Image (cartoon, rainbow, N blue to C red):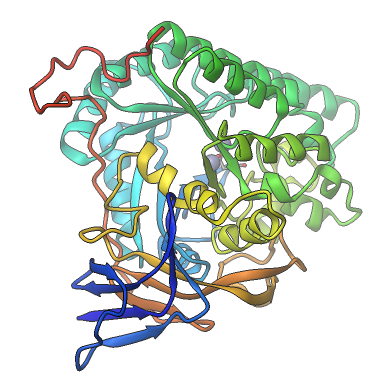
Length: 479
Ligand code: URP
Ligand code: ZN
Ligand code: ZN
């Protein structure tokens, strides 16, 4: 089974050049000028368009059981929606309940994800600690292709990781050559602020951002980074939303510490005025953590992305419909936290990033695909347009326009945080495992076609000349 993408301009993280791309049996087999279309080959006309690595969204939560309900988007609908927007791979999160074995949770998520239509991998959250967690982290890295572990510094009384868990888990991740990641918000402060606001009679969604001010994120970001510094492990901060957190990332990077930062399309595009909407439904639809921030934070986030201090873009796609959000009608702290966007991330970033000159096309590829592939060790299988790589590609029409709406999106949620936004530049075709799965507005996906992607650990088993090296200092930081 072959597909030839003909007449386009290939855009990668490094360069842009005119070339055709031949995909056979799920892999890219040839990239070059004027490739012949043999009989029977499906030809995609990419004239006037860009051919880029499919997007990688490194932060999604499909069908997550959370805050008394389950996210409305499952692995089937969610990966399909991603394909409609040019995202061909997601990294989702296994989140064990406190005291639940990591292996049991991992197996549960693997079962749920069998219906995915596009490739996916898993980060695994460490929500509690004992010897079995230490042991299971080893099994997950060595036998099951997990190379990143997540720590929620918020959500007290549920999945919050305290300092003891952070230190134990970061230490173990370092031994294994795995990357610790954090949701940086001080969960104790959030908890106390929530109680205080509720006591004051502030029960509506406007209380959500008030209970999670930027300093709460800045403190946790700095703490996680300092813990990582002491333990000499790299660390990845998910959804950096506040300049206080970004400053902590920049300072550490300037000091030579290996710190990575992710920014959400939502945090770049949507500001905190949404929480003042008179309609509970609209304000509650935007309740996610960390919350949307004032515009001055957004300006800094863009600068963080432009400067390379933030390397990846994600969505934190975690959808709840209006009837689910209604659980917090009388108490904002009970509104299930999460918003969507897996379908729209690429187009809103192109429109607000490339069309405005904030990002070059090559930088766009870096922050929507290649950097995530490299940081999470899937490169060059993912995130590249190279012979031998997976044929996960997007054909991008820079002239195509679209007005985003929940009425027309594929996402299984009744709201869209980018509602009404008109973007110029969108996927015309998405190719997943060498198959054209999205074409001119129509999906053609196969339930269960998505594969679980094993991600090996980072420990440098081999040095530059191929000699086996001792696994004592993965990611060691030069000072
Ligand atoms: O509000 C959010 N972000 N919900 C999903 C869980 C998380 O914190 O990432
Ligand atoms: Zn989070
Ligand atoms: Zn999340």
